[in-house]
Length: 238
Image 1 (spheres, helix red, strand yellow):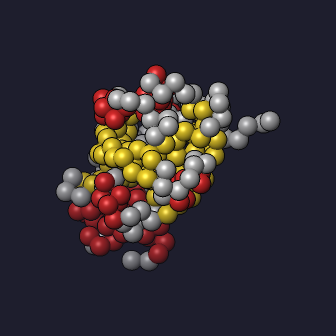
Image 2 (cartoon, helix red, strand yellow):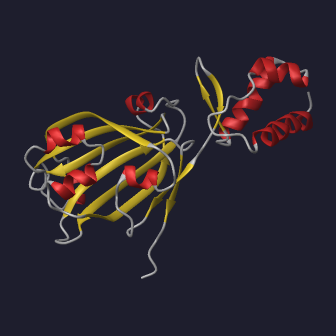
Image 3 (cartoon, rainbow, N blue to C red):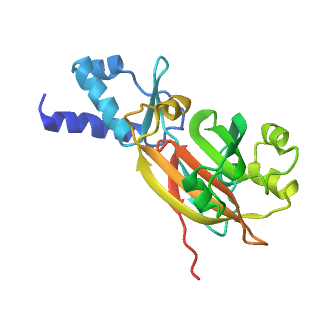
């Protein structure tokens, strides 16, 4: 098969996806091979091309489905809340706490939080979904002087850490610093978000300050699937 024929197959499949609802099942390798009279290997290559363009998601053992990426907007003018940001674009967020542990601040995180290295803090690991699909894995660090009594229980019951800090910690988190890059996830993170460890994902590192007192109150490291999110950074005009 010539390169032009392969490109024509991919272009035809891209056209087929237009107007399809996110989550709709896509033709299998066998069906594509039969439709275009090509080998299963060629059909598989075509599906991998669609996946590389973030147009479809291949789920091992289940099939291939139309992707539905959403804009995840990061801005100093928006609350640094995962659930609020996802709901703002009409999607349904869900998160689950995997662990809450008392740990000393590592040097790099301590610098971001303007505390001494080794200062007491709480480390929260959280997994997230969007519209029922695995989407992200975040590690959040909160100094003990900000972490309110009973918050370790509250963060397991309330999906929004931003809400817990506002209601129990009496702080108003605002995004103060952010860095976005594409990186290979650690193996445990890749497994948690159900992606290939050899596939790059978004890495969003950020620091939130108290909007009233200005003290850094939260630092996080978030790995997010690029086939779920289009990360949009909006800078203020000031």
